[in-house]
Length: 384
Image (cartoon, rainbow, N blue to C red; front, side, top):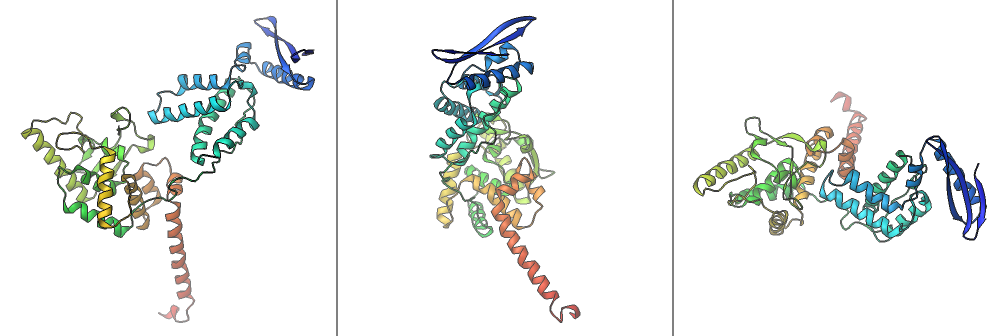
């Protein structure tokens, strides 16, 4: 049983803890009321009863921010991408701002939700969710270790009140895509590598980092396929990196024209290495005549200029990935096939990303059903 006594600083509880066959005392003070001290003592006794040792119990006394940063340094840092590390670092800074001095065991659901609410006043839901995702993962690991027994992130609502800058999913219609393709083909020269990149993006729906990480050994001209198994990290390391996830590693088919375009690049690549004595040391597909990579900003600049000249909406290279997907959807390609071709984790991701396009298609299909039923109910339909 715990003993409770009143001190000048507030109420204190004291309990006996058995370690290696010997009893030692664990105490904590500073509670405003006797009931608070009794509740804290009961929780501590429960944790000890469940087999958590003194070291684990003491770990709950450390600041949440200290545990969070240590968790990141040991278990997460460098395990994925630099972008992922940056997301967790920002979540830690958020915790340091809102939970400074709060012990791991003292972090409550109300305290946690209030911090999310305050942050959400000036940020988007996506930003709030990112912080919540990593803090929740950290807390769950603390529970798994037995450091705490209650989850302060349980059923938290990470909602932001600021709308994203661009809520619409940008993509080109079939007619606009045709105009852009015709313009790209009208002045297709190996020295203008951006045009090749844009044509490849429309034809495959590949991410820009996947396109830039493509090497010639991944192109199979006989089978008319390309294997996407790596990316190029053009923001941080300036070298090859992993794909976004396991499902992003895939082999996709190429149409006849895209194969011809790649063969054109391949032939020119060989010619330049022979005549100019330059080397494509990394065997990259999309390099300029100096065998250097083209930046994302340079490709987007080319695309914006082309769109402006054609009177099309201003888009980025990533919008061509959405364009590819939308064209396949409108041509009624199997959603499972589209999901695999895009390298999505599952079909749900594809359905969520292109929900508005699918909704439009459903409306069109509903009209088809209505027309069919009306035809069947027409008196002469059965004798036609």
